[in-house]
Structure formats: structure tokens, C-alpha cells
Image (cartoon, rainbow, N blue to C red; front, side, top):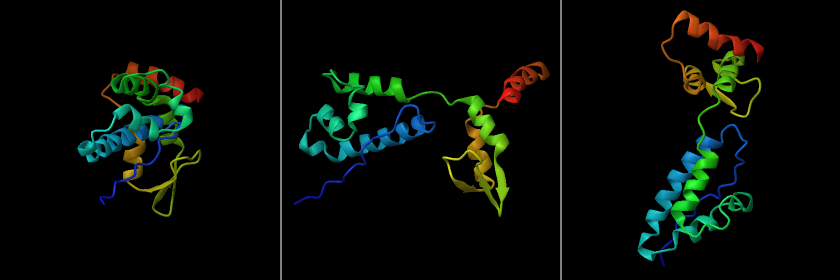
Length: 143
């Protein structure tokens, strides 16, 4: 008998700061998972319901098509990064013993310099004029 790969259940609150990244990763894994089941010709919507939590099933309740359910989940989870929060994490991180430690952590400890690059990725830095830099820096001071 063939063994079927088991997918981790998606159970992340949309309010979680890492929700967008975790959604993208889970969704990619879900697509791979569906491809392993292709020979069984499963109902994709049923497979989706079997691999999400009850909290997330509420989001897609009433959907009769897989594509519509995925659109709703993308609308809820696929958000742009919170630039102000990302810049706050970058400016408040601490260096300790060749690693980066996040003072307000849910990301944990990661090595330097990949840690700084990881933090800066969500900051949406771009070439700006002095006036634009000033205007973008003012909200950071309030945080």
C-alpha cells in the first residue's frame, strides 16, 4: 500500500504578524500535497477542509468551489508587510554572542548577518530623497 504524505494543518490567526509568510509557505506545500494525490483524483475543496482548522474553515464556509475558497484565504492572509512594525523590529534588535536577539520576539534568535537581512526585507527600503526620508522617519519616532 502506498504511503501518503501528511500535510500540517493550517491553524494560524490572520492577526499573527507572520501570518502572510506562513500562509504562503503552507499554500505552496498544499499545492505540492495535492500533486501527490493527483492519481486519486480527490475533491480539492474537501482536501482543503481536511487540512485547515475550524477557525479557518469559518472563513471559507459556504464556498462550493476550491478556487473561490483559495481566493478568500488569500484575501485574508496574503497581506503586505507592516512596514512600521518591521522597521521597529530592525531598530530594536540586539546583538548578543554573534546572533541577533529580538527584544519583542516571536521570531527568536537568528545568526548575523542573515538576521539583519531577514529583518530589513520587510522594511520596504527604496531610494528616496531627503524629504521623503524625513517624512518616513517621523512615524518611526512615535513608535
